[in-house]
Image 1 (cartoon, rainbow over the protein chains, first blue to last red):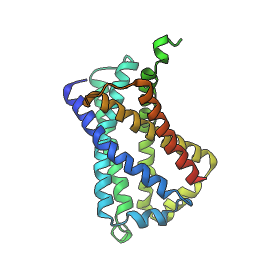
Image 2: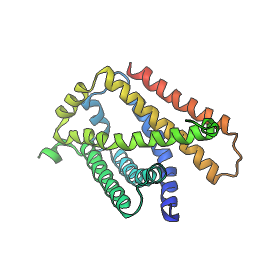
Image 3: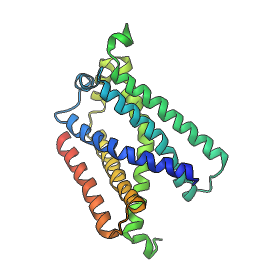
Image 4: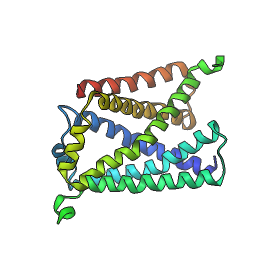
Length: 115
Length: 113
């Protein structure tokens, strides 16, 4: 692993340690008595702090996960080189786009999305 | 066949950390896709939550929460080894990580049942 990837992996891990702890606490709180869309969206709609938190969470994940997968694939399979890096860069981009879309979906008020 | 070193707590911790990470990497796109359902309105998300309200899905959810907690705890151990001037007692540190992760899983289970 190059020095830059190592630092990106560890820096994102430090940020994610905080984010994941908060996320786990939120999950456990939210699932009490069952989940409904109304409850979820009531907590998240137009909640700026929530939106900023999850945007940063998604960004950190899209850095952390592909580098971790790269290490595992390097060690456990013969797949190395440019093709692997391209696939993992695309995976990173996919996580970023899908993650931001998910955060926007539960953050934006319905009138913004549905007119 | 497992070598003697493969049964050491450090090896088991590294293996679990990686397997949990792989599970999370597979799960994340599905999680994002499901949440994006809210773009189609609260009704869509409610239908999705109802369809997935089955014992099997609850078991998978428990597995994902366990994987997340395990990956977090074992990742904190890696960061501590690499960045803190501490000499860990591997067996104790790994036991604490596993216990904390299973405690999170248990609390989740008690809240969804």
